[in-house]
Structure formats: structure tokens, C-alpha cells
Image (cartoon, rainbow, N blue to C red; front, side, top):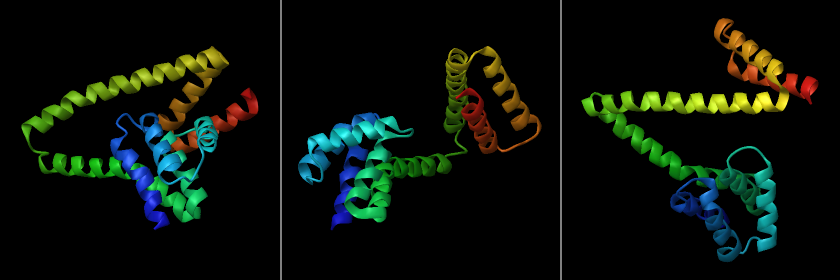
Length: 176
């Protein structure tokens, strides 16, 4: 029953928390503090502060921490799965519908309209990363990392994970 409670404590906020992780924080707090009484308000706020200080989605970090605290490794797995399950279910249903109607002219037009929007959003994100990097480490370091990344990924066909790892090592050793 404990694992079912862990699942429900994160599945319900995942369904009702429209807007992502930050929108689900009060819902998770209600489940964890008031409904199941696994934590006090103070403990929840401390856990939330810790989760906010780590990279990644807040909802999965809370689910993993609280799930582990209540049910060990299996509890952490169940909590994280419950936090992502609503989005996963919706995505599977939408992809199923999209696949079913993939030959429809409306779906083809939809994908034609979405592609440029995604390209612009990715471009804006890349520009913002470049600006932050420029402010943080300067033009020449940013240019060096950008050019090296481009050459490694596009010309030498090195997997992006290795390029990211190398950039992290470079930044940690030479820029830290």
C-alpha cells in the first residue's frame, strides 16, 4: 500500500499541475504534508530548497527524494515514474493519433507550421546560451568552445555527449 500511496502522491499532481513542475509544487506539498503526513512543512521547504539547487526538472527531483525517503530505491523509482507518467501517457496517445492520421493533409500542414516555430525557439535558446556564456567567460572562450563544438559534431561526427563532456572538463579545469 505504501508504494501505491507514493504513486498517487505524484501521479495526481502530475495530472492536475498544468504548467509543469513549479505548478505542481503546491499539489505535491498537499499530498506529502497534509494527506500522507510524510513530512512537516519545514522538512518539505528544506527538501524543495535542495531540489531547486540541483539541475533538472523539479517535479522528478521531489518525487525521487520523497519516494526514496518513504520507500527506498523502489519508492524513488515509483515516485519518478508517477511524476512523468501523465506526460508520458498523453504523449503516447498524441503520437498514436498523429501516426494514425499521418497521411492527412491537415497533419502534414500542422507539422509544416510547427517546424519553423521549433527552429526559432531553438535558435532563441542557443542565442541566450551564447549571450550568457559571453557575459560569463568572455568572447574568446565562448568562440573557442562554439567553434570546437561545431567542428567536432558536424565535421568529425563526434557524438554530442562526448563534446558536452569535453566542454565540461574544459570549463572545470581551465575556467573554474
